[in-house]
Length: 515
Image (cartoon, rainbow, N blue to C red; front, side, top):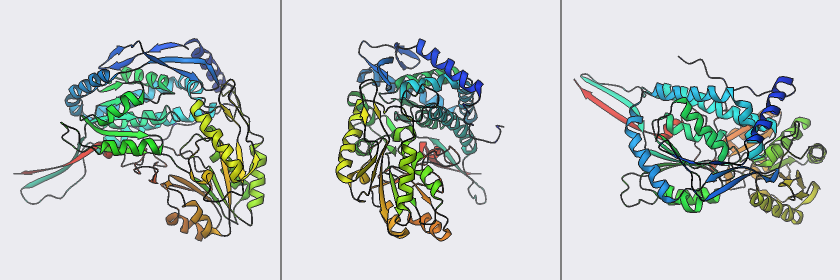
């Protein structure tokens, strides 16, 4: 019997021991830079001649490691391995599968500083953000292990006289896992182990900017006892192997986290029945957001400013949950705007390996170019009141940027920027604030800062997002506490870290026996 689930605590880096451990881990990671990392197919390490590099976003001259590029032939081998392993893996006692996850969590917990240090280097995450990312990965392991144990005997059914009916869950099949780079550990871990603990086999293709931390996690799965072939580690060019994996007739499930454009394209491709395919594919997709913090006229204004700041600029705004829009009641608009601007100008921006740095770089040149192009668009659409500067001479750094008096239909209020860019709009009353909050094609997260109980009740059902927060920021969902996923073009509303998530990777089956 496992103890009751509680989320992994975050570390306090004002404590000397915690700070010193991470500083030592960063030095150790620096000693490991520049190594080659192979594919892993059926337990076999396969190093290819063609490779791509993972670099430090804060210092693009520093190579974290070189990952092998898989070809479609490698992908075929991985599908064969996954198919051959699937029958035996599906028959493993669900508690034994859950135990592998618990062991993996214990391994990572012991090596937390090491994983955090690697995340700081490879993804450019500041200390607190990296620590929270690793903690969330541990949470997924612990939570899904317990969820599988709860589901292993199915759900109760009624039976008639001389009849015994059961409702059980069976594995759905081979799962292609395509996680993002922004939560390079947590989401990668969660989307990999959910299908595994449910009895499926997996092909994991990590995001191109962050393959090394995914490789290190794969080693943990092996150490925890995952059999060969049950999961296969495939790195490479998405144009060459990504679509091939999605299209493959042996793929049963595609789980994807990333942009709306890529997600909708994969969703469309997965709907096509390929030659030899004997099932309809499932797609579990989380495709981003354009998230709003609404501030009511009777809100705690200091809380409102803090909530907007954290939502917009945590991890440089590179979160699908980032609050990149602030919609503020006209009576308190100037006060809230001025306070957020004041606080934003105090934020530190620089090398995230340095203790206390609030913001690091954005992930790569592509992201830098996109974000800075939106800053130039913002200068035409609103009033620049903070930031607006950027520098890619050494790493990809963008200062926290705020635009005021933006039309709710402007591009910087409608399109996902995925960077430290915040737009303010004014609302004449709470109804108009909700109307503006709902005026995008996304519906992932949102926050409302108010003391008005009637407005809280109105927003519960009138603010159309999958995760709605009152009197706090709109980022920072915790596994098992805030199941995460959105409406509309934010995805399939699959609630990661929630009680019905594992069921998405299984097929329900009714078994009736007469006696």
